[in-house]
Amino acid sequence: MSSQQIKIGPHEFTVKPDFRDKALQVSSCLCLDEVQSYILVDRYLERGNTAENYIVRDPIHVDVDLFTLWAEETLLEDNLVLDIIFFNLYELCSLFVTEIKSLTHKELNRS
Image (cartoon, rainbow, N blue to C red; front, side):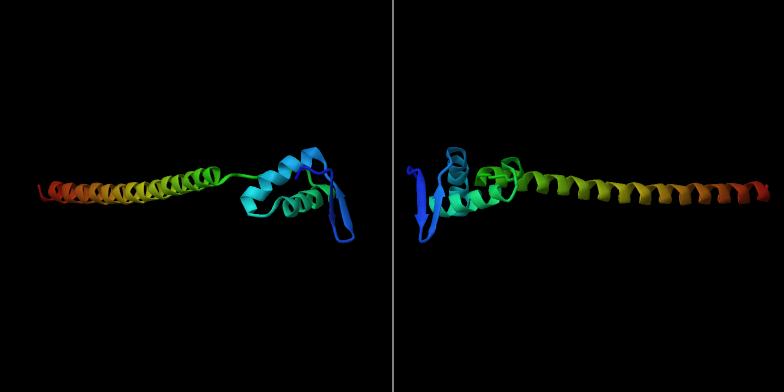
């Protein structure tokens, strides 16, 4: 996309250099040709959206993000399992202490 203008039928676009770079990023991520991606970026930014609001990531970054989400989810699940084990152990210990007190009280009453 080296030309200064894009003409498609009755429509004509003046190519803005800063949009061109963003369009090339979008093109590779969305598998669009350069003209399609330029039109998409141009319309997006024309509607008042800012370039900071859109994120173009290559597949490696997406994989890293998915791995991070998976790792966080795994940690949350592990913490939940540990909490359940702790509460069950606490309840078991409480029951054990209650039973020991009961047996001790019966022994003392027997004597």
